[in-house]
Image 1 (cartoon, rainbow, N blue to C red):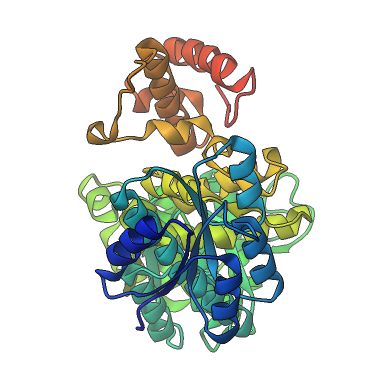
Image 2: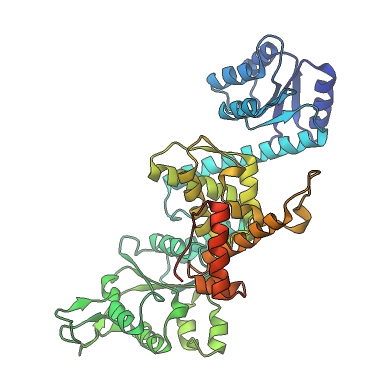
Length: 466
């Protein structure tokens, strides 16, 4: 991969020399000029990845230079350097397309960090563009987004197992995208033109689950006034996805096992067996081997459904995918909201990358949807993101300013952040969230409502069932 090309524009010769020397150390191709006019002449002949320009220049300003270069179609990123920084000038620079700004006097190490971050983000944007193009050209991966080694391995597994008719067990924490993987496997199979039918095994009691899967004959029970196909019959020739298979009652597991042995089903209340041709894909966030040890899951059913295993890593173990995922989700959400796509600042993206994401991709999508709904502007910065994202900070990252801090307020924010995480992980059930934090239900409810009023102005995002 070629080294990045950088153009420096500053009429202060000594600073220009220092910056050029510092940025050339890593082998980058650095060109230095003193005026906007000289910069425009160079840019007419050559392409650059990054332009770092002083705001105050003789003749045209750095902002004028950036505007003119952008209007000519250059793809170069810009950093504006100024000794006269104000909030308004910084926002104006960002709105016009600058990636960042530096305030004189600045430390050379700060310059190196800013340049590295922008060039890394540029590379990431290029990869996102390639990824979007691939998604438009080939939807076989079902929208599975990520550039990490883990996700590349998942894609290879999908391509390998898809064409077969093997039973697949997809494991991973809640919110990691297990159904997306199941759909991608289905699309990559000879059954891709057939139906993909899914059911959440945890959402129905045993009696209803049986009738949903196997169907009902007329008169089987009170209210069964007509015969009805079950999902096995509906999915005939296609794929049946059994989500949260670990939640299925033991008695129902036995009935499912019998079906999977010969793919013959009998409707509830029926007298005859019916043959079905269905591929089975299952998913769970439970450790089924541990459930077998606790006698909550049948070992023979486990071996029947786990012919091929796809294990999805949690988002915290593939943080390099977060920028790509955030961009992908923003495009999708903005399209749904019919609004323009805002720019997310590197600082805001850094907050997203440092967060632990207990709710995985589903939580990231919720955060992006909420942020885009509440932030009408063209820029998403750190303050646009939910408050609780800022509480997930390791001790070594904490800082204490010269002015000090309100420790009690900060501790309340941290407590509220963990309470929100617990609510997300528990699916909004407050009693379960309280148990996760080893709190009584009454205490959890009191502090959750109190902190929501303090930090959200009375709004309680994610407040769910008691």
